[in-house]
Structures are given as structure tokens and as C-alpha cells.
Image (tube, rainbow, N blue to C red; front, side, top):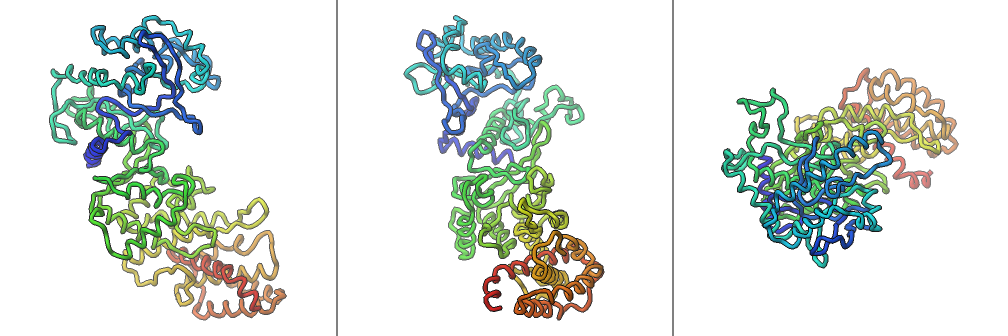
Length: 596
């Protein structure tokens, strides 16, 4: 199903005449430097195609490259300086002894490049560009090229090279007669047995080795595969010598699905977003504006999208509330999450629905995690912000491997969030109690993203499992009778009493008692209540004392006894109650101080 929809997407790109998609037998490749020749094969110039800002070469449509793992394999009409010119480029940062061993293969590489060129384009093939390349290679004298002022840049980057005739706009390999000659190679395979393609159902020559998929975060830079076999245990029916025959995908279907994936995963693509360790791509059966909007919904502001996602999410929620959907929202919508697994790619999740269903699920997610926050915080949190709040030191590399994919699946299916999510958030809250900033301030452990995530989990669990427990609200709920929520509020007020009495101190009750208070309240709260009696008389502002005592009285009015243990869900409600109460203190701080 996945490969089939990717094949259809390739055909859609061809029909739309997308400049990014390559025809059969070709690929879009970054080529930083072009060797400019005259019609007689003389070197004219070296053209630099790199962008001034990021020094990335322009992408050109060139013959499909060889899959290079080991040995000597030359690409057609383009390659590195070692293949094209027989010139090895030394890298000062790498081991010199290893580079010398690689240099010994350079003559073989250049010879392979020339032999493949001559095999593809015999001397009776008439084309001005091919004639110029042939003469250039036959002369085998590239000193004028090495003397060009741009050659130093080639040595620094070891970038790919290809050929272009002077006064021409297109590469030599993009000439119509040259492309036709390259595609005619398929005629040589007439004697090869054809199989029924498992993707299209049509008879085709099966692809033994599939084109590498590049752009998956964490995978090998040379690319990895979704379909591949390299051990006898993975094969069947004695087809271990031809790995691709165990999952017979036709050559045309193989080219189509790999080209689609590489196009979606390419740098700068607006149809990919990084969700934890899952490189996520998305597309629709036909062209739809949602393809350009998903990145704004899920990407981290400033990281992938480059701007805040507030307007995009607000517009989505507003359109869902009206209940009016345009006819094009019935189009099929697909989302695919890919994760690295050594030389292969693992499918982390797959979503197959409609644009309408996708919008509804995303809107539901943002409404579930909605919680009050500070004025400088973003109104809607990206998946990245939610995931890193569960990781050690807030680093993306420390996010649990399967967590991102599981969370995304929960969002797309409208199911409860992964059960491992709540323990992960609570662990980080307890572990970071004593962290301080560089200026000595205590860093809040129940942060906005953590509170938002806990709130979303509790809301979804209550809805999905039809719990009688009242859902957690967006802001402070004084009517909530849940013991965990009440004790979280109480802990925040007791911390406020201590801070008002003693000011900034090295270790607050949060630093010393939060973990025990949220897990085994009976072991901590009786002591904290006694400490409160010593702290209240030390507060100079008597109006503040009155307000704090009123708040304590209101909270304790429904607390009969301190429980010995709180369940995992009530520990989450404890964190939300603590967050709500603290947020209420600070949002109304000016008003309360003025009244006092």
C-alpha cells in the first residue's frame, strides 16, 4: 500500500511537470561545478553553481547514479573528480595512510568512467556534446582545468562534476538525443524474464537492488533501503543470489517510489517534518493546500518552519468549528514516518485517511493539550517542544526511540497518547527539581510543555476510557475534588508561603520535597503544614498573609486526610494543580499586591 501510493504520487508529479522529479533512468542531483567545453572538446571554463548563502550546488537532472558501497562503479556523464578526471582530492582532516590506499584506485575509477561512456555512446553516435566529451577525455590533459581559479573550490569540496557546452543552457546529459540513448538501454533486457510487479500488478523486469533513500535523519549518508535482502534467512525459494526477487518490485515501480521518497525527503522540502527520530513525509492523491500547511502545524517554530505556527493552528481550529468542509477535503491524505535502522529504513508509522479526517484529528490534539501559559510562551506547542520536555537535558538525541512515532500515531488515530509518555514526563519533573540557571534562579520543573502534555494525556484517557473523573481544565479549577489536584495546589501555596517569608533561598520545599509530596503525600505534608505555621508570622505584608490563609483554607476544606500513595494519573493531576496554582499567583500578582 505504501509503495503503491508513492508510485501514484510520482505519476502525479510527472503530470504536474514538477521540476524536482526526474524521468525514468534519471535523478535530481546536486552538481556544484560544471566543466564548460567547446565543440572540439577544449576546456573553456569551470562554472560554479553553488548558492552564495549556503554554498550548496544547484540540483540538476542527470543519469541515475550507481549504488556505491564498495568496489569501482562509475556514474554516467557525472561523478567526483576521481572518476571524471582521475584526480584524487586529499582531505587534511582524514587519515593520510587511508587516503593513499584510496588513491591507488583512482586510475581504475577514471578508466571505468571512460569505459562506461564509450559503451553507452559508440563513435557512430552523433551528438555535438558527446563528441566534445569524447575529445576531452581522449586528450587526457586537464592542466588548464587545474589552473582555473575555481579549481581550489573543487578541491575543498570534492564536489560532483559534469559537462556543458559553451553558450548552452542545458547540460550535455539533458540533450534529448542523449536521454533517448540512455533510455534505450532497456532494450538490452528483452531476454530477461519478467515478473508480476507486487506494486502495480503489471509484468516488468524485477529490480534486484533498489535505489537508496536519502534524507532520513540518522541513516547512512550514502542512503538506506526500505526493500532489501542480504542474508539467506531473509530469503525464500532459493532466490538468495537475487535479493530483489523475494519481493519482486518492477524496475519502473522501483524507480517511481524511490524518486517520490527522495523528492519528499530532499533538503528544503515543505512536505517533510522531523518528529523525534522519525523523518515524516506527507502528501495527497491530488494537489491540495494541506501539503504546504502541515509543516506549519507540527514543525518547531524557527527550526523547520521558520515562523510561529499560531496562525496556522488558529485558522485550522476555526475552520473545524464551523463544520463546513470544501469538497477537496475528501481527498486521500497520506503520512509516512521513517526511522534509521543501520543500512535499512524502518517504517515507524503510516497514516491513510482523508484531508478532512486529518484536520479533525489535529484540531482535537491541539484542543486536548491546551492549557494557560505565560504571555511569552507560544500559544500552540509543536511536537518537537512536547517531545524534548520528556528528554534528559532537553536534547532531541535523548528522546525515547519509539516515543515520537507512537505519539504521532495517537494523534492521527485520535487514540490515547502512549502510556510511556506520562511516566517519562513525571520522571523529568522529579529529576530537575534542583536545577538552577546561570544567574542562580531555580528553574521551574513543571514547565508549560510538560503541563500541556500531562493535561492532554489525562483528557484523552478520561474520554477514551469513559472515566467518571472530571477532566483537567485549561486553567485553575477551584471546584475540582480530585485529591491529587488539590494537593498539587496546596504544595504550590506552601511554597509561596516559604518564599514570602524567607525570600530567595538555596533550597525551597520544591527542591527537597516535590518528589515525595507527589508520590507519598502522607510522609511530607504534615511536616510542611507545621513549617507553614513558622513561616506565616515572618511575612511582613499582612494583607498577603490573609490571602494565603484564605487560599489554604479553601484548598484544605475538601482534604480529609493525606493519602499514603498517589496513582500515576493522580501524580499527573498533582503536577497540573501545582502548575495552575502557581500560574494563578503570577498572572494576578499585580492585582493582588495592589489590593494588599
